[in-house]
Length: 90
Image 1: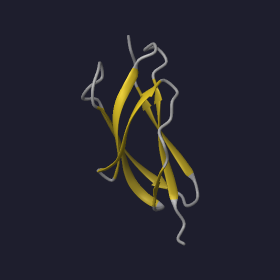
Image 2 (image 1 turned 60 degrees about the horizontal axis):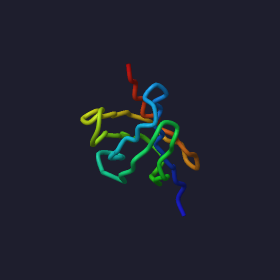
Image 3 (image 1 turned 135 degrees about the vertical axis):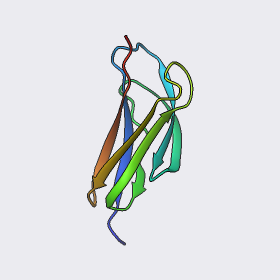
């Protein structure tokens, strides 16, 4: 079995109170899951291949609706990479 990489997404929103954020999560522009996360919560893990990828997280409702994160990363084999989705409230 070839080596795999694993990706998870974590919301960081320390000044936003107990709000939950509906997210659409993607790897290489392919939606791999949807979840609703609060500050400090982490999504389920998604397996992919090692190498270069684009990770995305889009907020699909609420205060941050329309916010989208798109990041290029290089994933190593047999590791878990955590993509942090930072949301700030004023």
